[in-house]
Length: 62
Image 1: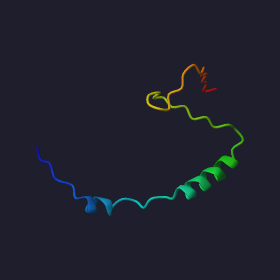
Image 2 (image 1 turned 180 degrees about the vertical axis):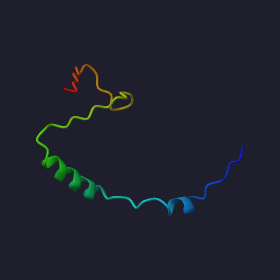
Image 3 (image 1 turned 60 degrees about the vertical axis):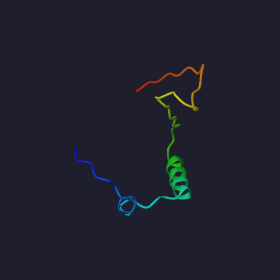
Image 4 (image 1 turned 135 degrees about the vertical axis):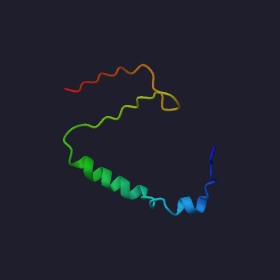
């Protein structure tokens, strides 16, 4: 195998700058404010601490 070590400093300098949580929240609230429908996020991997039991879920693509 031809493996190379990765130098963290060289790797990190090529990353995009982090976006602040406040900016993300502001943009999200602005976008959601223009939508006239409810948005529901359904986790399709119910493992871990976010697991919820005994909740019926109906989905429709209509």
